[in-house]
Every structure is written in C-alpha cells, then in structure tokens.
Image (cartoon, rainbow, N blue to C red; front, side, top):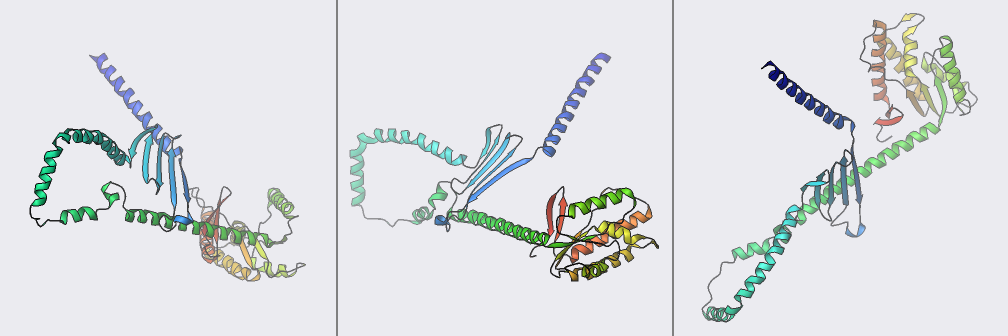
Length: 353
C-alpha cells in the first residue's frame, strides 16, 4: 500500500514538474522572443479619392510559428496561422458561399431538365393569368430588395465601411509622416548645433593621477576639433569672462558644458564644507541662466544617478537630491531634452526647436 502511494506521488510530482517547466518555457518565449511586424503602404494618385492608401500588415512570432496578415482594401482580409495551419480567416464566409453556389448550379440545371415536358401547360397557365384583370401589387418587398446594396447582400463590406477604413489608414499615414518630419527637423537642428560648438566648458576637478589621466585624454581627443577649452570647476557663470579672453570670442557660437554631475559635486563638497541641496541647486541654475546669455546654443551634459536602488550616507543622498532637482529644472528650462541610452538618442522634449 505504501509503495502504491509513493508511486502515485512520484507520478503527480513528475506531472507537476512538467507543468512548471512548460510554464517557464512559455514565459521565457513571451519575454525573450520578439514579435516582428512589417507594414507596407503605398498611395496611388489615380485612385487617391476612393482608396487613399493600399496597406499590407504582417505580424510574426516564434520563427513564423504564429503569423497574422491583413490586407486592405484590394482583398480586405485578415488571416491568422499557427504552425502553417489557418485558424481564422475573415474571408471564409465568402468562399463558403461560392462553394454553395457551385453546388446549387447542377441542381438547378437538373430541375430545369425535369420541367421541360411541362412547358406547354406552363405556357397555357401564363396566358390565362394574363387574361385576368391586373391586381394591385404590394411592391414594398421589391423596393426593399432593390434598395439592398449588392455588396451587403453578398456578405462583403459596404462602400461606407471601405471609406471609413480607408480614412483611418489615410490618417495613420499622415500621422506617421508628420512624426517622421518632426524627428528629421529635430535631428537637423541638433546636427547644426553640434557643428557650431566652439567652446568646451570642462568642469572636472582633478583629484589624483586617475583624474589627471582622464583630463589629459579628453584634451587629446579635443585637440584637433577646433574647440576652445574653458576649465571652470565652480561658479560656471565666470566662464563668460574667460570666453572674452580667447582669440576670437564668437557671440553666435555654441558651447558644450560637461558635466553637470562634476559641477554639482564641486559646488556641494568645496573647501568651505558641504553646502545644502537648495544652495547648490539655486547657485548652479543661476549660473546656467547667466551662461546661456553668452552663447547662441548651450548644450549641457548631465547624468542619471538615481536607479541603483541603494541608500547611501546622508551627504551622498543630499547630492542625489540636488542632482534630481537640477535635472528637473534644466529640463523645464531647455528647448530640447534628449536621453542617450546605450548610444541611442531618445527625444523626450524638443518639438518645434
């Protein structure tokens, strides 16, 4: 008896283990296997009034094990396949009706052949009916039949539905086009600003040989790029006085300030002691307000130091609070805000710059 129970428990455990592994596999596939899609749309000027856009959309997942395709308006269908087997087709009803029509056609021909011997009697009946006085006919049913849209009677989409769907894809096409033009405009503006950067405002304080080596490396990288380097570790507004001392003080040039994290640390942890979060924030932002008056464009590089989820000693937490407030107010002040994630620029603000 005990052995039987153990065997049952063993089988139940194996089934439970299999289910857990299966669920983990499904979860892994959902999380790590991407959904791929391809959208192709084209616009024909000759049919732009009735059909603004001809669109084809295809979505695949798990090496085409699951796929869906939608085409409008030429065929106007939606099909879903799993492992190559079609599980849903929006045009299935139309094909079924076509098959039924083909089946009914031979039956009608057979019925017609059977009725041939009775043609004479049918003709006599028609003559008798014609001789009778005409009766008032109720044509309401016929009128209703005439009013039916042939496309609706055959189960297809009406012209109004097609216009609605076509209008949706036309609006979607225009929205995507506007987004594209906006991104290109912002990109051109950023490229123009970068090309016109003439002043590099360095804020790193040199502490030790490692920091000195980093500074020397940055200087070598900037050497052949035509920058005027201004080193200003605190009181950033004083960089304007050093700008006037350069060979060609250009009022229409742009400047790159790198980096706000160093500037905030220098202002907070100075020789006079540790300053408060509010003092550092107000002092830096007042300096930036003054600094941007001396350049056509001012690009500020800052850092995200808030996502490791750890707590530090009080002075470090005060520094992080100051950086959060500085970043927030800089973003509010700026014409454009761009977050660079693993080298990819993500535009957070900047429409209309």
